[in-house]
Image (tube, rainbow, N blue to C red):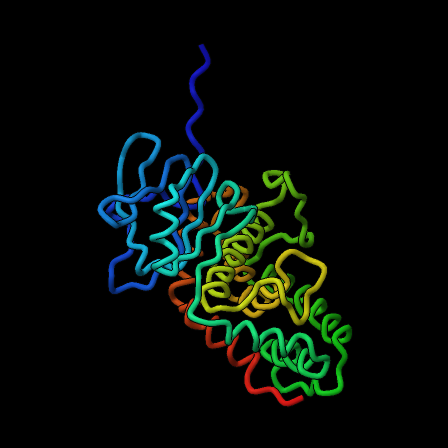
Length: 290
């Protein structure tokens, strides 16, 4: 009889009473898989595959990521909606984004702001310039077209990869990711893919809960979540790229999901991504004049 191989460490840690966020914390997300979400005395309860139960503090939770093997009751969705906690259905370790449930908001004011800016060519390019200005401080972008700024961004990101590789002494052969073949990538690319996917999920929760739409972008187009990709580019350098190369130097050829999860979560909390993202969205849209 062949011995049973040990289970691979997970990107997201198993939820227990000990690692749940406290009321004083503002927590971005919790990932769940192989179990069910239901209501217990008007509170949300997670029941794992072994029968263990943990109450989830949805009042201080921005997003609930439901991975493979999860189910959720209708009553639980009602409570989550009332708490304005976004629910998302994702692939294993949140490497794929499938769908989300939109929580109701008080009004459509922010959605109308976004639509107005996106539908007017002058306002739309101004929003794009504000986003690029965060990455090109001190450079006059007032006469740059969207295509020119996207070209500048492509050069910047490629240079950033090589700078980080040199700083952390990590071998780098370029950004490579093949859908469905995650394990075939090198350690750095696997960390980048995992962190990018988690970042998209968190930003979806911010955008939806703030009354904006992830589908109305200013830079990206022809993709599932253009506004999310627009926003993600504001944070990838610090949150994903630097982390990927620094962890690669630490892990070598061994990709450890638990280490990646812990490091990513710590950076999300340290930079107060939820609060920062809301402020950045408002700054990008601003009081634009046509």
